[in-house]
Image (cartoon, rainbow, N blue to C red; front, side, top):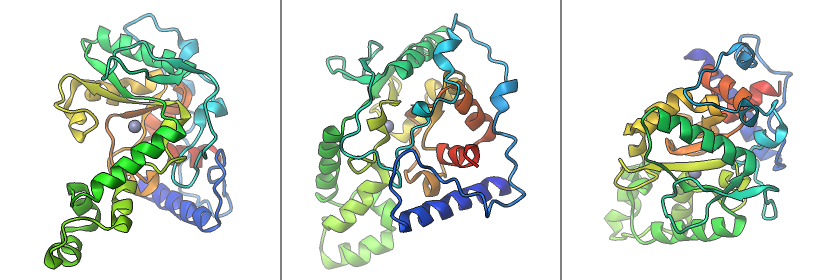
Length: 290
Ligand SMILES: [Zn+2]
């Protein structure tokens, strides 16, 4: 799709520009308008106004609609880190099924209520094995997660490393030299394709969840896209204000590889535009703010 590629290119372009400019403030996505080409159709923005929503369950729509409240459009990515001190103001303990039942998972109150409504709807549709595998993650938690990933990557040469650098690079720089462990620099590069540096994780917003089901052997793999839950979410998550945050093929814009299990609450209005516009979150914010 030509238009989509064009939007992606623009988002990349501005992301690079902002990165070069050292612009790292959160809540400040690209807003350039001067070079906006005429052939970008912005009609997808605002399509929620004419969308009719239907639900199997008795849904309280006031939970799902945010009137595009900026608090729910909070952007956290490699260009817009939240920093070490950001903590969401209204976290609650999740009471829905959890992957590790003894663990406490927290989420923003509104996002939690929207998640409960979505899980109830999934249950009504016959999908009753969905669990939360990860939710809010504090800065310090992300420090240890990130460091663990680096240590694991340095322990050998993973499939992620081969996917990141290509086999030729790995062969020339490691295998041919009898080296079977990644350097710190290369390990860091690999980890940053799938795990956020502390302060740059969307999980620190308290607005996103990783979902798992009993269909999977292990959670948080691309096998999630083969589940009934994923099929349902792809069609219905927007009705509950959630979006697939890291779509397949959008790595150059989102900065992360495909994560079919990761859903972000943005409110029903934005989620609807993103769903029907076939956008990712960065693209939506770019269009919404221009
Ligand atoms: Zn996640």
